Amino acid sequence: MRKTPFHLVEMSPWPLTGSLAILTLPVGLILWLRTSNPTLLLLGLVLTSFIAFLWWRDITRESTYQGHHTSYVVSGLKLGMALFIVSEVCFFFAFFWAYFHSSLAPTIEIGSTWPPIGINPLPTFGVPLLNTSVLLLSGVSVTWAHHAIEEGKYFSAIQGLTLTVLLGTYFLFLQYGEYAETTFTIADSIYGSTFFMTTGFHGLHVLVGTTFLLVCTIRLWLFHFSKTHHVGFLAAAWYWHFVDVVWLFLYVSVYWWGSYKYSLIKALIL
Image 1: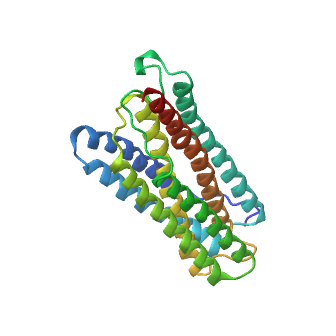
Image 2 (image 1 turned 90 degrees about the horizontal axis):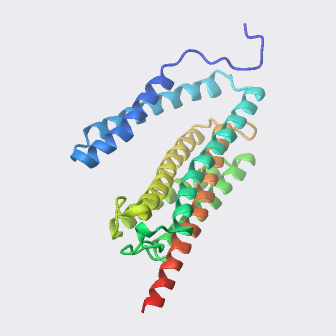
Image 3 (image 1 turned 60 degrees about the vertical axis):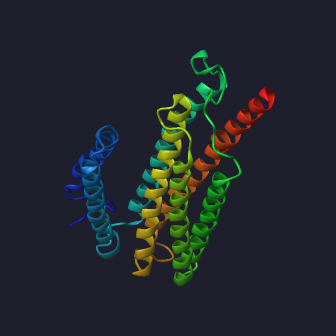
């Protein structure tokens, strides 16, 4: 019989197997780029998706059907999610540090200018601005869903979450089209490296956040959330707002500021 309000998680294979599956993703990506063989990458995607499904299934059972997520457990989950977002902030801080370290004092190896000679950055007010509008609108729609859940308007919340998932998917579609139009690659100097690493990892976070919100939409459709107990959705909403804020910093620093310096240098040369 349980003597504490805390949930002692049973032994689970998913943390270890999930870590191994995720490990195959970067290794598979490198092999795909170097040997044009996507087998390991596809295997990693399938395994990661399958383990994520099983892990989500177990957590849903614990919270919805077994009642293990007491108020104390919910407080711990919120704190854990907050600390996870802090770690994500540190993760992206490293990429922004690399970008500004190289752009504020460009070395002679890249022509003592930023962007480096030969790099044509993407237009500021093209697809990047549209992506910014899409993500800002998705932030509004997920807030709409949050307030609808708290008011017990579940059909309205489903509408807001569905719109958020569609906007996240549309963002990824636009990001793919943007990558197809770039005239530089990740191997083109420090600009290409920082650009694709920062925007690429942000795109990966959008993919994870969209999947997270899709799971929340399905759970909301199955009446797993209530006015007072919806910590799963709350974690997804926090994560999505974090993704929105990172994109705003990314758009201003990489797309707008970098393109502004390029336009100024081009005007001086001409």
